[in-house]
Image 1 (cartoon, rainbow, N blue to C red):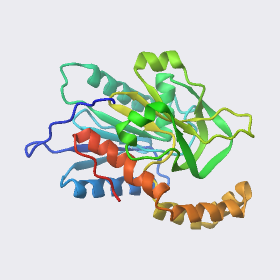
Image 2: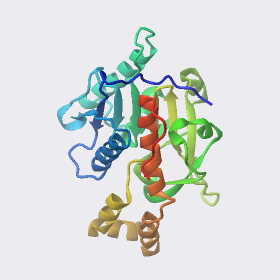
Image 3: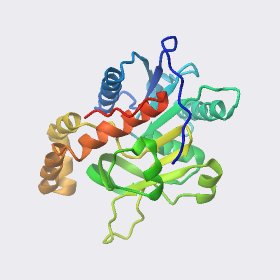
Image 4: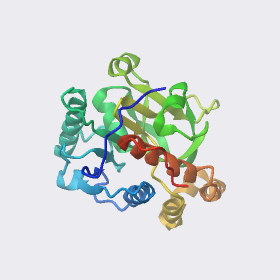
Length: 287
């Protein structure tokens, strides 16, 4: 079992949380869900954190090291073609700053980082832990995620079943892990996408713990049933799903949204577990 050093919070130290918004101004449910999870978690743990959002792609905003917890969102677009954009360069510099801070033994208070979907792809590109490539077709829906052995000792995955279910929405994927780099970083692959023996393609990596203080997921752990239902009720999105997967798939997705053992369970555990771990709290999940 991995042991993490708890942050020593008390009445004189407030929790500061930075949300890095990589949505580039596009309307989305992800930011609402992240805010909602933090609010619910704060109430459960009787904390009053300071939460600040940063518009990374439109305004080139990034947090400094005065924050304690960082959640970097998903977002649209190609994670490969932006590498020379100012915001991308700045985001990668921020990620390096987080690593340097945590590696400095003089910094007792470590910085905890969670990376979601597009941010996860950027981090895999940054650390060169695996290949980031375009998928043959868009992955969109509620899918099973299969845990590897390392996931069973992962505090952020505490309470999950194998497989667990998550919302997946992406045109790109992370495949072909570089195990030498992973070992050198002290990183671990935690889970992979569903097994499809009838399809001759490698299963994508769905989560990595990059180091003791940094973890990321290819899927959307913040997604809730309400937001996904609203998304699927949009006529353009309904047509995309029907055209690519059929009406039966759409109906199956809508049915799964109301299953308490699927994305509701994932929503109630992963990010709350991360926040609990970050402040050294006992696990309170949002059931």
